[in-house]
Amino acid sequence: MTITSFHPPQRTLMGPGPSDVHPRITEALARPTIGHLDPEFIRMMDELKSLIQYAFKTSNRLTLPISAPGSAGMEACFANLVEEGDKVIVCINGVFGGRMKENVIRMGGTAITVESDWGRAVDPKAVEETLNTHPDAKILAFVHAETSTGARSDAKTLCELARKHNCLTIVDTVTSLAGSELEVDEWGIDAIYSGSQKCLSCVPGLSPVSFSEAAIEKIQARKTPVRSWFLDMNLIMGYWGGDGKRAYHHTAPVNQLYALHESLCLLQEEGLENSWERHKLHHQALVAGLAAMGLEMLVPEEERLAQLNAVVIPEGVNDGAVRQQLLAEYNLEIGAGLGAFAGKVWRIGLMGYAANQTNVLNCLSALESALL
Ligand code: PLP
Image (cartoon, rainbow, N blue to C red):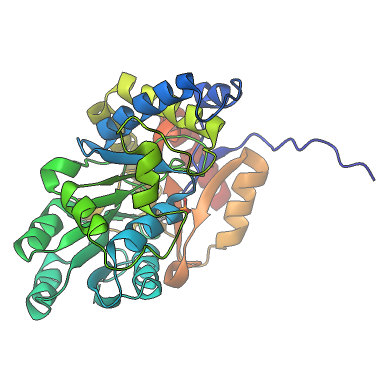
């Protein structure tokens, strides 16, 4: 049998990611592929770096997109900053904090965990106590926007605590970048990673990262080589590092990088702060509509993410049947709960291009009819 071209259905993506891709970004993907060392491509890379710096609010020179998804950005931070025996304090309030811990162990470090309830922000008091009891800790790692629960942690305060205790910070902003306030330089974040597929509305598969001077110093002073060749920043710096040389490291995903460039141009046109505000506005409308239907949110108001809304599934409602109905009848994807929240919450994403009034209204009316 001859297999024919794949044509996916046209969905509205209101789950935990990927989010709807802006048409200007899909158009950018279809532009001619050129060599990844072509002078025009290199010019685009320079622009891309400054656009990522804009989105992160940083002037870090080591700012670039890793050619792989958010998990690779996470791994790049841990692989480069953690050395055998390093003590790393990892805050866990959902699935992705757990993945951070796994990274520390695999890089030969010792993970000291600070557990907070799922559905709540990381507790700064518990972090401070742990920093006090482990004065030899080198790094504090936490997730800014926990996609598994919809909780936002106070990254500014956690970074202040880390600095006070001479720790570097590794911060996961896969879901927060462009959707929530995020100030890399002002808050003093040392290593940060994100993903292309959430509030940037780009295709999945790229991870913007950025490292402070203190982080670069630690990477360059390592006694042992980074355990991953592909993610070794010492090597990647030769291609992206800004010394003008652009040595071959790996073949860059040329067209995907056009897409990321386009998504960041869109962000800059809108204005970063306006993007944060737009997410908040549509989140408030969604929450008001859900409340009118008698549905409750999992996360307390002051700790809620705008872009990931965890909604408690009412008693007696069949989680899978509702999500299936939304997909089949409305082409609308919302997310299931993860881990302990499987079958207990829905995760409704309002990310990037998908954070708009039409989506909020469609989602509310589709949910209402499914729950009738
Ligand atoms: N960290 C967080 C908070 C995430 O939400 C995700 C993905 O959903 C990841 C890390 C991993 O990113 P990716 O799936 O792109 O590898």
